[in-house]
Image 1 (cartoon, rainbow, N blue to C red):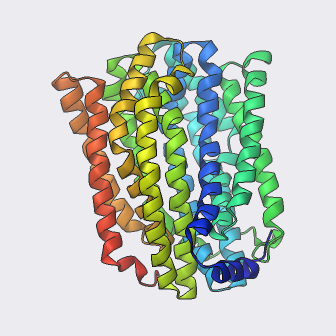
Image 2 (cartoon, rainbow, N blue to C red):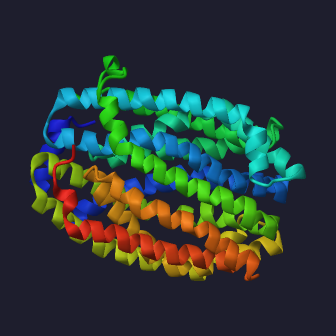
Amino acid sequence: MKSSQQVKQSFWEEGVSTKNLIYLTFPAALSAMLNNAYRVIDQYAVQWLGVDAQAAIASCTFVLIAFFAGYTIFSSGAIALVARAVGSENVPEQKRLIGSALTASLVAGIIILSASGALAPWTVKSLGLQGNLANQAETYLRWHALYCLPQAVMPTLDAIFIAYGRTKVVLFLQATASILNFLLNPVCIYMLDFGIGGSAMATGISQAIAVIMGLILLSRTRGFDSKSFRLNKDVLRIVKVGLPMCWGTLVYASVYWVLLRWVISPLGPAVNAALGIGFSVLEGFTWPVFWGFSMGIASIVGRCLGAGEIAKALQAIQLAFRLVTLFGLLASAVFWWGGEVLSGMFTNDAEVLKQAVLYAQVLAFSQLFVAYEALAEGILSGAGKTKAIFYWSAPLNILRIPCCWLFAIEYGYGAAAIWWVINVSTLLKALGKWSTVISGRWQKQAS
């Protein structure tokens, strides 16, 4: 792996072009797709356990996103601060930030997963799950708590490599984890007869191997060594930048948690399973592309601000806007025309397929704005202006709860109403975040 000096020299010598932007963002996009693939693989692998198993995986999705919110504190803080340290060639600061972020993410994972295992019955009850569906979800959460500590460290490790502009390394690690997960799922679920818990076991083992490989590669940089593993005063800087992202992600997950309990679950297991397929499978193909541009721009913005090169950041943003427009329109096409084919690969149930296609075709109308929102978040997170992301996300996400209940349950419009409420709120979030980007406040030196 290149040193921070080599990365910086390559970045400024090559400049910002469409080719270089794609070269940086596409590996990040593919790695995010593979990172999401564990949910897709799990959703696919458990289908022979029945609809309840699929619905259990779907119901736990937003619980796991809530856990991920805790890990986001350190990954979001790391990408902004490490990228700036790389841009300014401050190697000692890189070592302090990286060591502190990785150590803190490990501690957070131990705390979160310990609580998850102990509170699994309460979690399942709070989701409104009953009978065999509840038993399957509780089993999955307990096994997840036991095996999936590597999921706490992986986001921060990815963020550090992205801050260096080394997105190919992230892609390599995620590809390794996904291939191992795909191979281990049938072994753990069916051959070893661990059932739904085996899917969590497969995920944990595969990501543990990827984390070990990532740490070995990271040790070859100037900005990290084995002595870097310690908590220091920089953890407060990391938390300051990352905490708004944590709260935003937590609110997002909590909103879906409430929707599952009071709106989606009352509409039946088919809608529950359809949400899991739509969210994990369909958006598992499209969202990572947007996330790749978001992380690529975050890396560029952070390094440009560290080097005092605002013009290069603006140039990259203009190029990225054109590209995400194209991919946002392509995502809409995939949702509208490919929803039935893709969803049909993950269910044999006619009603689940019908609901999944409905999800895809309604959400097709918001994919362009999802792309714009992701790009705006990348700009702001790279600059360390994460509070603006929270302010424009959390209130509108919370507003989804009463609106979804009103139109889906009270007025009786069903699942379609939920997806249309999400469309409208996504549009408003994208407009709000871009108003902050256009204002130029993100260009000021972050604290």
